[in-house]
Length: 89
Image (tube, rainbow, N blue to C red; front, top):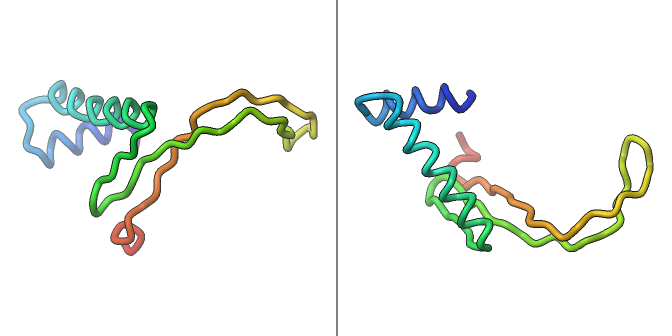
C-alpha cells in the first residue's frame, strides 16, 4: 500500500467527505510523529506500536559493497516497534 492508497482507505473507513480532508489528516499524523521523534520523544500508540528515536554518534563504518571505510556524522535514528497485538495478526 502506498500513501495514496492509505489516504483513500482512511477516507472510506472514517467516512470523510473528500480526499483532501483525508490527505491532510494522514499528513498531520506523519508530521506529528516526525516532529515528536526529532525532539527525542516517543510516540506510543496503544495496540499498534511505538515510534522512537535514538541518537547515533559519529563513527567510522564500512561500506558492505566495497569494503571502503566511511565516516558518519552524529544523527538521529528513528525506529518502530510493533505492539504485541499487531505481531499476532
